[in-house]
Length: 220
Image 1 (cartoon, rainbow, N blue to C red):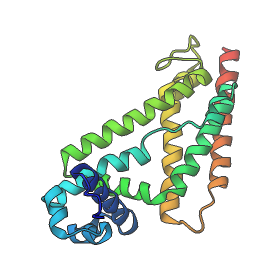
Image 2 (image 1 turned 30 degrees about the vertical axis):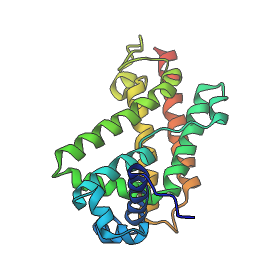
Image 3 (image 1 turned 135 degrees about the horizontal axis):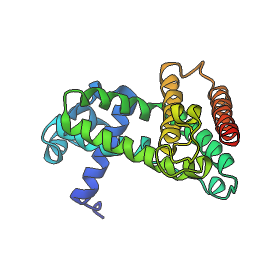
Image 4 (image 1 turned 180 degrees about the vertical axis):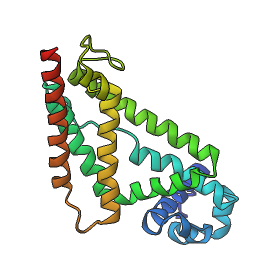
């Protein structure tokens, strides 16, 4: 019985999966149409039929990299937490572990960022995706800060206004920077880096900042 002929869409998906695997293992510099063909177990001509140039393949892979690194995943057990600060910290821990344990994906994000310096289209997609990731964190920061916009607190305390501790956008940016800092260190030192130690330090910093915010509002 003859084998089932794959549709063009299925074949293209197989090629993209193979290309992502090559890039994740060896980096974008090692990504060639021939390397992808070998990984996908198809002919070089088949890859050329779907992607005429290497640049087209790299552009197509960007969406997968962004999906792996800039989409906030909220596990059901985190969703069930009722205390806002506990939910924020647990989600921070989960995302730190996810991106640090998938450091090859984050390394690809860094490689695309380098490409984006000279490629406006790639740079625009990266900026849009990262803005979306920060905005997704706002949902979890607003209940903690008790604010819905920059410096929304009614307090006139100069310490709060200076550091923006009541600003959900600012807190979201801090959360993302802690996560990406964790992922970056995992890329640099995949063996020696301690994710749990990094999270413990980050949690203490956030707890201190939020405690200072509450105390400042009470004093004011």
